[in-house]
Amino acid sequence: MTFQIELVSPESISYSGEAEMVVARTLDGGDIAFQPGHVPFIGVLAVWSVDVIRPDGDRDTIAVHQGFVQVVGTKVSILSDVSESADQIDVERARAAKSSAEAALAADKEDADAAGALARAELRLRVAGAEA
Image 1 (tube, rainbow, N blue to C red):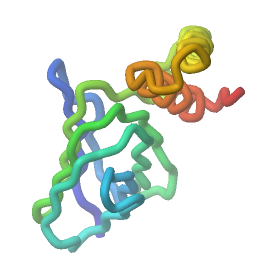
Image 2 (cartoon, helix red, strand yellow; image 1 turned 180 degrees about the horizontal axis):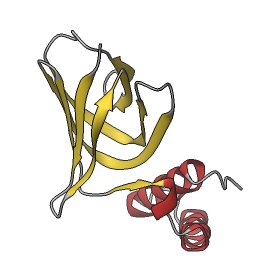
Image 3 (cartoon, rainbow, N blue to C red; image 1 turned 60 degrees about the horizontal axis):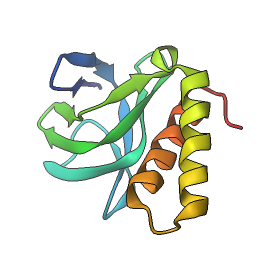
């Protein structure tokens, strides 16, 4: 049994397909897995990856920079301003962003913008398989 998943940004549908399971991280509930038959749900997503387990058993991992997840019936909808699959991530740019964010945090440990930039850069590197 499968369900439909769509990952939507303001510009386009960045991912659409069938899934046996979707795993996401919410701000207040930690990691949560959705399977067909899940009760209706709405949650706020953390800066983290969304894993889509397809019917063939393969997994698609997508970097999601916050947003919302909604489960209704046989559909999971994820709304996010930014989402990137591994092949869309510029690894060198992510490494440079990580370095800049770390430098900003070294100068001011309370810099919320730098902390957010660091979390996004680390997520991009993890999804791209280039953690360093």
